[in-house]
Image (cartoon, rainbow, N blue to C red; front, side):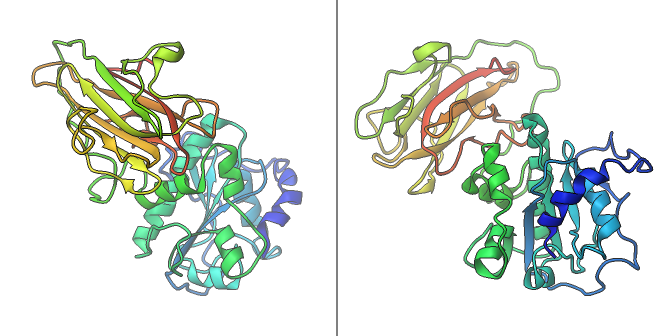
Length: 374
């Protein structure tokens, strides 16, 4: 039942099957393609216990559709298949039936997982982002559907589990999906956060994504809004404030390759609320004021505690053109800015907050507008 090793040598053969139809090319990311689903006489007839959802990565750089074709054709001869394969720009292919045992991670995992999901691997970062959002949301929604906690790799025996967790706690020698996720800049902490809350979710009062501010139907009367912000360098001092953003060292708050522990943000029009996540404390309370001399109510953060996440929401004055905060950050552990965040949820999958949990935030850029200027 070692799916990954068998896929490595067979996947090249799959691409040569000329009789395979090219289906699902225009499918939406949320659409499930059943073209390669096993029929009622195929696959295991054993029901599962609803205790875990298993997160895999395929370990081969091949289209998700090819993997689905292979699993459909060889489920019995190779004794290996899962319920879903995600890839090809956010598409979802069904193979096994939910609630019935798949053969993807050993006897214990197979018996306790109503859903196991493979993430197909790609070198294309834009494609990965679409795949990742679909993968995370499918893991999250599957856990909710079966009453399984959305916590990833917790110490409990119920929840969303990586194949690595199964290896470490039950049986096996696999480490997926973390190696592949890391190749696209996703840490274990980031993955755990994303699966726990899902992307673009609503009505979940534990989701750190704020409730979007409604956009007026006919925006008019746009005003210039300027945002001023500054970071405090951990163990040192407040850095010079930055207005909006630009190029060079004056274009961002923070010091490259340095750690910061406090932040303040203010605007000249409308209102703004903000908060930070620290490695030591998690998400701290929202703030509406900005006063670096008031470390209780005027700045976000706790002196000496490392900021690794920032969340911002701007409210446009009534009667003015709707605008929002566009912001992005960088960490001490990577060379480039992370994805752009927008406070109303328009940057699909990557705008809940800026940062990567566990990685100190070393610079921050913000501007207020009706479109991103990055």
